[in-house]
View 1 (cartoon, rainbow, N blue to C red):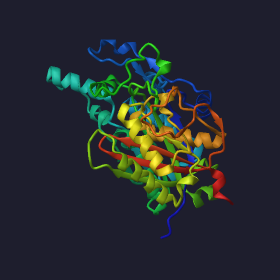
View 2 (cartoon, rainbow, N blue to C red):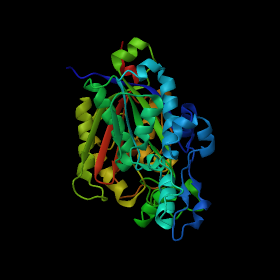
View 3 (spheres, helix red, strand yellow):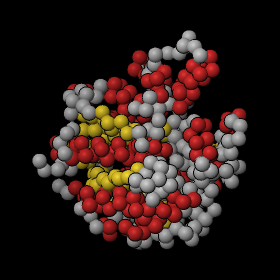
View 4 (cartoon, one colour):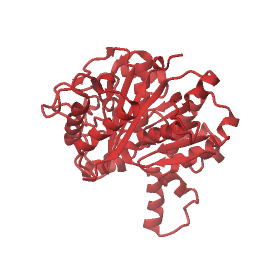
Length: 416
């Protein structure tokens, strides 16, 4: 069977810089800051960071949005995923018969399930040693595949379910695996993305590794600082991003607007260290994506970097990028707007790339005042640029040595 072309017909997002596509695009163009102080974390003894990127959703308002029966097994992370997915499916214009046909599947991920639900469950069970206040739905909220499973039930999807739980590559792996499922004829349409809820446990995890930003606790607009000489670590964030991927011929037959095309995907493993980044693995993922797309490095018009603002990670990524793509391609890290949304970042940043192609601009790398001399001298975007990127690369790297690279093409490349 000849590989099929895969296009994007729907997108939905909730993020620290907005929940509507036009709102998010405007925030990127204007260099908006989605980071705020977290005084509610003052109660956590010895937690040093006080910054985060929060999505503008109240849990109670989210729950009122949907029938209780359909969301009782959802924690915040799955609710955010539902919000983004509802928007994406509405844009795609898919009817109920299609969703229930068995030819529509889902690939969706998060770093873990709902941390708040896990905290509540463990707090009751492990301190009181009693089941009296526990619910049968508690586990369903914090299980690792809570987003994929709950979304499949919520929308009545009967195709394949692919949960991706690979930390910071959860969202990008989901998009890649969804793309492959359609490309090779296993599904016609896939819902794909990633989500993450904000919880002090995530901040604490990176704090223990001395990987969080602490120097700018009183200046949230100054952090994170990807690739900058004064960067001092990442800022955790939350949100969700969902794409509807569809076989090109089917999308054209429906006459639905197309946001872009998935041109290539590469993923691999360093096979070296659980937390330390490895430049060869990063290079390999980018090379795999280029080979899958049958593109030369010079064909890429913009790179959305993983760029978390950690000391070693930014250096390794910049050197790997230079080795594969050279130093002339515009590049920026949009985590400088949202913080690191962990399992959601690959999907949210994919949507950022699609918006840049749609609206004709390149988002600047916020807080990049002085490039770390250890980083490769890439063509960092210092100010918002008017541009018409036709092919963009979106890179993400995760603990466990998991690397991903996605390449998206503008609708204009599709031809007639």
